[in-house]
Amino acid sequence: MLTMTNEKLLQAIRETNPWRDSTWNVEIQDRSIFDEITPYINLKQIIAISGLRRVGKTFLLFHIIKNLLKTTQPENILYFSFDDFENIEITTVLDAYAAIHKKMPEYLFLDEVQKIENWSEKIKRIYDIHKIKIFVSGSESLFVRKKTKETLAGRIFEFHLKPLSFKEYLIFKGFHKNPAMYRKELLILFDHYLLTAGFPELISIHDKLIIRKYIKEIVMEKVIFTDIPKMFKIEDPSLLKTILDIITDSPGLIIELDNLSRELGLARQTLSKYLYYLEVAQLVKKVYNYSKNRSTSEKKLKKYYLTFPCTCLIFKEDESYLSKVIENLIVISTNADYFWRTPQKDEVDIILEEYNKPIPIEVKYSSKINMQTDLAGVRKFMEKYALKKAFVITKETSKDLEDIKLIPLLDFLLGVSKNELSNPKALAN
Image (cartoon, rainbow, N blue to C red; front, side, top):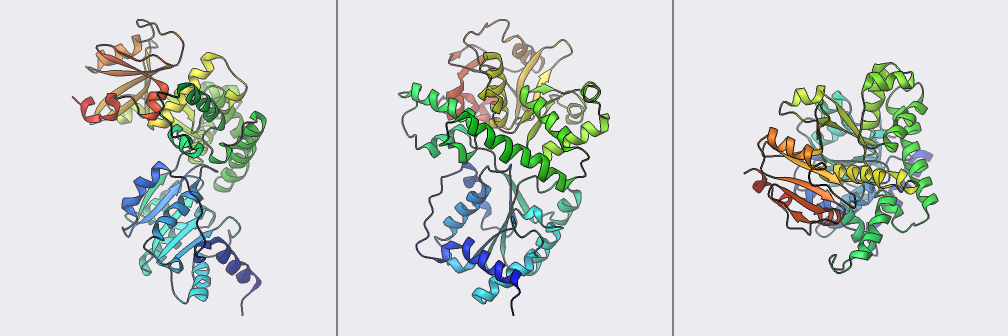
């Protein structure tokens, strides 16, 4: 006889697996990461998708399911979310599925799997015993603990889902016009994209107060006061919020632990741990001061950015702050790991690496650019590393200098400019 919990479980399985009904045809917008994941779907290894709250992980799983249904019978696919079932075992979910279908699924999708204690060990047992393709998702880094990495070593591929890129935002908005011919309309959409911070549920919202409340309460505070304390022992979560507010107010801030710990009245070690927690929760991204020696880079200065366009833009409209927000956006878009700064304050905003060669990118999102002073840091970096080409992201200026290419921001984000960044091999020469 089924217990009340099992009755609830069976009902959840029936309700959250609607593809058993031939009328199921949910409209799912394409995400660029789907094409990255597709080659791994037919491999035995587990596919893990991590990402910040509300960035669309569940819909990405549904996208994969919808694609599988082209060649797979609906009853061979099981989706289950642990949002309301944190204390239930994965084997219990499989047993409930077997009670309905009299067999095991071929494809198993487990949403918010990090809510299960020792989830990696339980997944490993299913992986080793059953011939089931497993997909898991989580609202934080799924591999924060060393034990998890060791348990699933060789058994799992992880993919990170970010907030919407500007390209994806335009797809969600149904904008398919020629960008060159509809520049004004594109600029209006870009302003709204920045306000939404790339969260899919906000693309039809224009009220700034609603947008701010959504990001503040549903995303940021939920992570700080609920998710992180579940992962780590936090004495005062409000200090996490204070640190995050500092980064939000000044994206790209170089944080010197000794100075900031004194200002906040925190031990240096505690501040370091709290910054790590914000990284694990995927609220902030750490970027290192570039050196050819990776271990040297990790010991030098570090910058911190948000993992989504900065929400303070809702109430700040000055050009200098907007430039910081654009810099943050480019760091996210390029997945940059480095910047460059010398003791003499020579600086380059972003350093990418391709074929073991650095690619310097400077962000100058302003109405006027001084070709001498504004590009001095880039040129010093090029001289130091014997580079022939660098890139500057501008507001509207498009120009090819002998050694530096100036690219308007929208062209860079949309990839409509025929620039060398789309051809890494050219940069390696």
